Image (cartoon, rainbow, N blue to C red):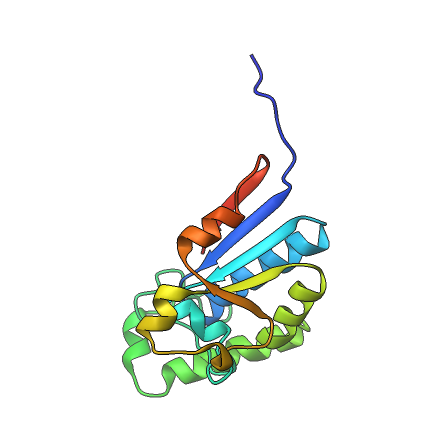
Length: 166
């Protein structure tokens, strides 16, 4: 017996990490959903808040220590212990940013503009905002509201909805 399939109507993405690779995974998925006409809501919590905090969003870096998937140019494995050497993380982050620029990848704030212009909604986690002593004015103008996770789940109901945690 085949299960009935329902089209994806809404995607709700939770971003809890502030590294370049985690933030961009969230933004690429959210923008792709918006471009496909899928209702899109993105919730940034804990260190993911760096992506929507105006003072931090341009300072994201690549996680080098403890990242078993880290690769060097040519696909060679990156010994994560090298990430502890001063300057290595900054160098790897600069390389990542230059590779993304070569692909015409938008900056974080441009991605947020694109997502909201397409009808997507951006939210900040109330608990994390309070924990880090942030205020609404600390965030990019595309942040619609500061809400609880319960409020966010309330926005994510309905048949054809997926919740993605990055």
